[in-house]
Image (cartoon, rainbow, N blue to C red; front, side, top):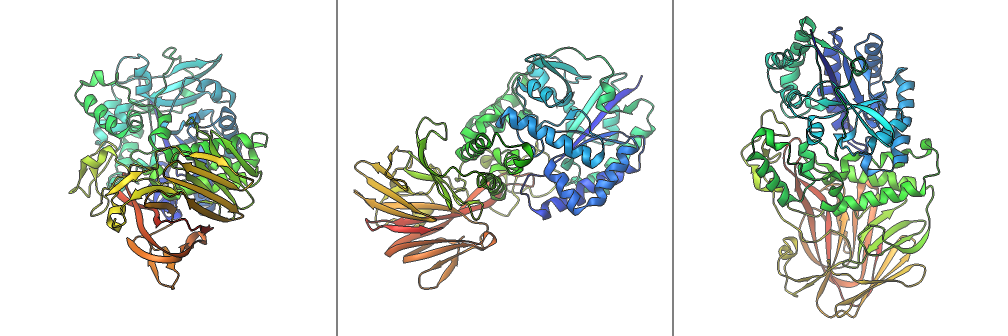
Length: 635
């Protein structure tokens, strides 16, 4: 009897990724994979493409789409469905999940003439109620990691076949993904993989993983294509009398292994990444101390807690959910920008840059702001928008959307409608558990998500903030504090950012914020201009703005015409200055009324990615030594 092998590869690029990055992935992975597959007509492969990548292919490489059609017609290939722009289902409403899935099915039918009833679940983040959602969208099956099944009590390391799971009278089929195959391919020899597969006589085994692991991940292009790992693997499969590749639909002709109710989980690394940094390390160390058969009982965290671990993610999430609710009555085809704003990659962080990548966050906000502009609900009101148990103040007019919170009396979101830009989207410099594990000497070789941590660049500087990078942050300082002190968060007498201010609406365009005994702040909004007045200032206070910028080459131009790059630490006495962000045609003018001391410094975070640990410029910090003279910020 033969081993029945399901091969499934997930091709994905996040909404807003750079064209040159996607093109590189196309040349190193997507294109050569299909070229190899074309030479082996006996091999059957299931592919999933996230909608954004498929749209990109249609524009930049239409011949690739034609080749996919030929492989489908020849019986080599089937295309899986999914939610159009690759959201995490637990992060969006059931309505949006169903609509995105149906919309993508229609797209795939128009493009290829057929589509399977299978589904790629983004990051395999599973929750027990999903069968109701997926069944409502016409989905019959999907793949999940072995861990999902083992956490539910299925014993053994080499799970085969498929199971039935249900919720609310809705049932779907779930296939366990072989952990060993995911780890073996393509890092172990072809002979080892074939030997492993030969053990499953008459059984169905599933391998499903990211296509980028075959060419894009460090060192894999040379291994997979130059050294012909994939060609040799397909060649061995084609010649084998003991292994047969099949599609999911063929597997469903056999009986299921049984029923199962799967707990909330994802793959183990994702659940570790979702934990607070110090617990992440503790859990990893604890798991490493256990025998292999005991590790499955240590589950880790919960995906939704990324929005707790990173408040910046909560801001994005709540903005997305707000807009989803406001446009719920629109037809799905009218909500494309909302769906693009739900792409998962910027809503978490692990081996990939995720939320630390500014271009991904800015893309999320760009599409959400575009969506909101179709139905702006202008006005000023209080609401527990962030779901943190306090009332935030939201002010929207034809030009901007301003979001203020009690903690620190600060701005946590500032959207410019004409630029589709949230200039407040800046990450704090925070500790990540891998900061203590960076191998300063490791810069080459084939890397997996299980490899040690290594530098993408020659060096990084680890600095940590004990506050969120909102604007209008207040700090009590000594007059002689240096620019280096502010950059490194040293010698600050009192950090007021974590203290609740009293927030009051004072008319149709004014907000008053008071911290008794320290400071009273007032913001008056006039179209695209904010006028900030400070009074009752009890001590020497630095008022901090944190503004997102595109690159280190963006400029600050001061009142006498002199300029400097945003990535320099600068200490000046100025009466006005303008921050330019050329790619977005942005100019943000600060008029202080008279000369004030202002310290400028770059905000650089240190985060992991699939190509190594790197520094990323998040924005520029502007630290104004305030007095009771009002100043303005024109956007």
